[in-house]
Length: 192
Image 1 (tube, rainbow, N blue to C red):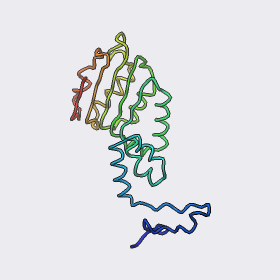
Image 2: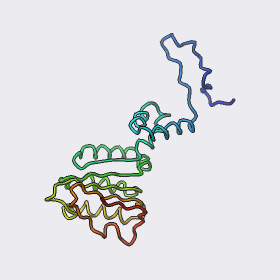
Image 3: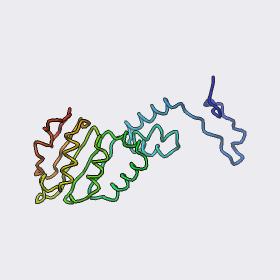
Image 4: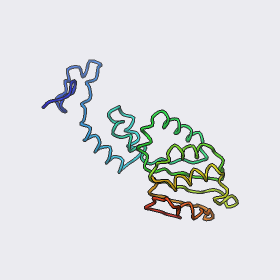
């Protein structure tokens, strides 16, 4: 069996230095096996998959796509959205892993970070917007122009395949033109 330089087959580790203070090196699992482990771990427990992302570089390569598959943000936690934007700016590859963006909007709809995040992730294939604001402010018109423009551009863009619009109060009215635009590529629409 031919191995890359420095690799040993599993089970054939040199244990001579095991008790001398220097741990024996961990054997490397082939990427395709570690990838299957990552896939099945993410199916069972996404939190565990996210923690496995921190084990080693080899683990990060396989687990990171699952850790960023679904991203949930809330306008109430603007500092978290800023941190996410910084993270995506530092490592643009992470954007390619995001398959679903979930946005929770509350009564505060003046946060500049959510529209900025929407612009950065304009190619996301699945978008979920949940309105949980108070009934007085309910309505598409309560969103500022920047929110409306960025949401509309994603909904009318060529990348969005799935859109979920949810109102916890039951009073948020999304305009029909948002989802029934000329260039809509939607395959799945859910309005709750």
